[in-house]
Length: 398
Image 1 (cartoon, one colour):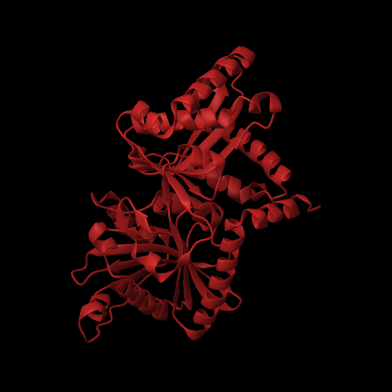
Image 2 (cartoon, rainbow, N blue to C red):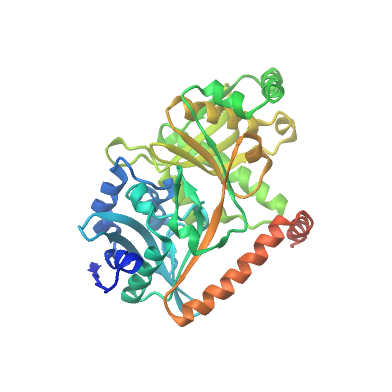
């Protein structure tokens, strides 16, 4: 089913521009697939890997919509050209109909798919008015569009002007054609020497290591088995509930690692550092990918102290940067949240905004409450003493 709404308004400037955007709503992935893939193939498309059709389809088929309904919104201009696509799920939260981008906590970024820099240059007010009209026609009280990058691949994101700073930012790295030049740019000579020495000590103690990129179903299954076990141990140590205790979450990751249609790369690319002889997985890294970017989504390392002292996670990260540059990708990011391993190689901070677009009065009240909670969360995360207290409380949980 699809619903097209075209509202003409009088006036000029921003109001006229907003009126020219025609919302077209698809209720199923199958109905939206053709225009969505066409947008993805566009030479100037501006999008994150988390809004690839294959990534969203894998998520919807496994984790599901948690009682919500799909609202796949395509905004066309007056000439009928697709300009913006938002893959949304609408759910009732405290009795209010809230639209969020599909992916939840599994997606680092919830940015729309823009047809190109020209589409991303739409004034924020133009996009806000178009979303408000979409909300009225589709039964939405509030759009909660968290983790909006302020800029993406050098272009501004208009939705970033419709909210406030997220509790955490993300961290990225521009790649180049020379992998070693990239590593020299972000790692000091001393850091590179230490990593080379740790790899030598690791090989001397346990045998040579290999960097593997999962290439078939058995290899994928073996690496994922190690990832889930390593991550469960780490979450238990930190006192954090393991999201992958849910079989649906595990099924999503496995589905996203499968190749796409007609030999397209999988939505999730899986890497591991292993002992060459035994195949033991020492560290893993998985990222949502498209033709230009690797966006880190999952990582783990073997908790055995006898192995952890060789920093297998850092060794794998270095190999990952080298691999992505060699394969011609132009950017790599390590997702949302602060961590030492991210700052060790990333030279760019990706500022994030949580955007709120209320459609009704009830939506506006929830937006205000949500914004207040997010400001408090940001304050806690940006204060080392308060954040350390949160960590201690988590570890004391029974």
